[in-house]
Image (cartoon, rainbow, N blue to C red):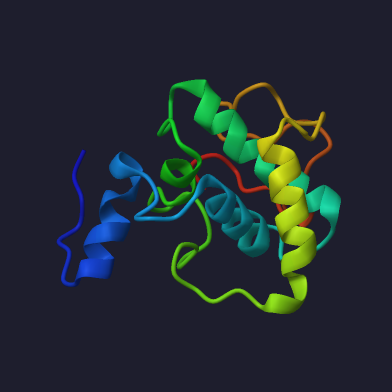
Length: 135
């Protein structure tokens, strides 16, 4: 696996996230960040769909085996997902939803693991906030 040349401690930390995890972040915080930036806070259902994609990847064996490893993997989710500021007004719902997904709640429309072709499960679209695998 090749990593881009890191020019600062933060860049190095983010580059190594896929291998080392969260750079001090908890799975809860990483899940919150994925839900917040990928769902555009569209709805609780949209956040659960994003969280389901993350958990499916963690469990698939084809991606890093930690929530933070998946969320921080370069090019998989929104740019700056691990470093951008989150607006505190949305955080109570984001936190509750992230905790629920980490405890087992899933979007039942999601396949059991992401498809290698990157296709979305039937009935889902970009409007739901679900990132295509590899996209």
